[in-house]
Length: 421
Image (tube, rainbow, N blue to C red; front, side, top):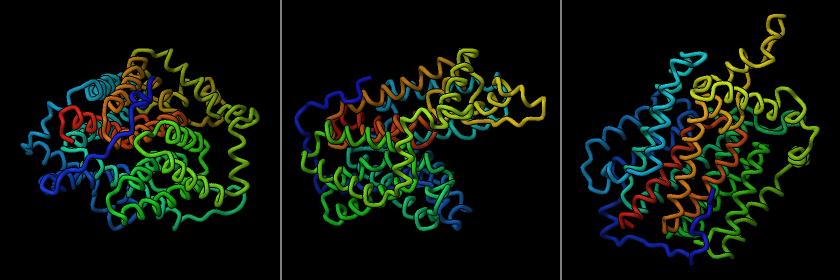
């Protein structure tokens, strides 16, 4: 997979709209609705504040955005502009998941995931991409994404404390667990670096700097080993391939992140990171460790190669199909494990065709970015790299986080291809 296509081109210049264009293509009601969706579906901001949760803001924002997109007649928002391999593959994955529901181990769980969750995620991915008219719109939504991650990080750090022993890291938070949160911060950090360099206002650059510090501190508190690997991959990409930003800015941003990590990480944190390559770690030795779960997941995939065990049915497979399930007849409890890997998750639950479609979505999103000349492209590429690497250790194959980033990639390609920058 070529994750860095066109990375060796000369540095990209940042093109800004004129004042007249800025007024004509500024924030409008549809873009505000999409921004609210990003803040709620990805940033989970409504769950951070109890008073907002009762308002069902995520559903309201999504419904409003869909309605306004349908009635919007702007030529820059024509659905035809979104035609391409990425949107086609997302649609095919949705259809394939629908086909797998009747054959799932637990049809109720599959139906709920597909029709009450992923269907909305796929539709909103299309609407997010469709709502964007100019590169500036992608920048606006990327800033919203970044703000949502920063807000989440600040709130959880203010409400959850670290302690000694097993409490050295954050535990279950709001919606995300600590590992999911670690990857969320990694996907947002490249946007912060972009605005630190490219934002036209000094106040935005200062805010980006503060946000980067908050995200990095939250990342450390998450104690995520998969997140650590993802952040390392993103840092390497930023240093070696982020050609839109001069090297001195890349070095300064990376040094800032490293300074926060080394200044705030505890001895326990570094001891935990050292276990990544240890063969004595539970992920290697335990039957409920990731390696054993992945092996069983590959087994479910090969045993059900066409439609898999059904979306959201990996835990059910662990409890009914795995070799461990036989213990239940002797009164021994068996843990219904999550897959802890996006690729194992999608392959085991939707079969080999579903896995191929999922990989195709990622490849096509990277290719779409590789064809773009927008200055935001390297930042978005870094974010997707962070998700792919972090997602190798997480069950996020159907997450709004991924399909929002994919929508940004589709939109960036759209506005570049049709000379709307």
